[in-house]
Amino acid sequence: MENGFSGEVLGPPGTEEGRMPSLGEIGLNHFAPYIMNRIMARWNVNLSEELRSRDMTTAKMRALAVLSVSTSLTINELSVFGVTEQSTMSRTVDSLEEQGLISRTPRPDDLRVRDVSITEEGRAVFNDVWPLMYEGLRQMFRDIDDDEYRAFLNTLHKILRNVRKNEM
Image 1 (spheres, rainbow, N blue to C red):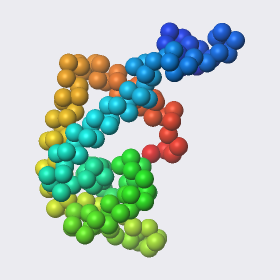
Image 2 (cartoon, rainbow, N blue to C red; image 1 turned 90 degrees about the vertical axis):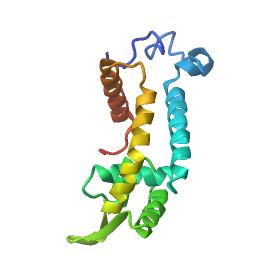
Image 3 (cartoon, rainbow, N blue to C red; image 1 turned 135 degrees about the vertical axis):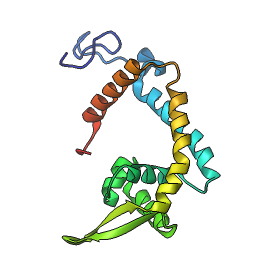
C-alpha cells in the first residue's frame, strides 16, 4: 500500500479531485496526533505528580531512564532519546550532576565532547521511580493483550521512522 492509508479513514491522495478532508470531517477522535498528545499529556501529568514528591522532574526522570539503559551519551543524544529540547537537557544534566546522579567525562579522542553516564546514586534514584513508570505502563495497557501491544509498538516504530529527522 504505497500511500499508507487504506482509504477508509483518511482516503488516499487524489480522491475526489485531490480534495483534502477538513479536521471536522476527520474528527478529533480519529486524528491520531491529537489522541497521541492526549495520552502522553496525561502520562506526563500523572508521572510528574508522583515525581514531585521525590524532588524530581520529568526531564530528570527521562534522562535517568535513558542513561539507565545506555553506557554513555552526549547531551545532544540524550536530548533526542529523552525527548527534551537540547537547552532544557543541558540544564537538566547540570542539575543531575550537582546532585551526583550523573557524571560527565571528556572523550579521549575529542576533549570538547563530554559523555554523560549515570552514577550508582542516579541508578538508585531511577530504580525508585521505575515502579511508578511500570505501573503507569500497566494501567495504560490494561485490557490490551500481548499481540495487540506488539502490533501497536510495530505501528509506532513505523510512524517514528516516517517522522524522525535523525537516525536515533
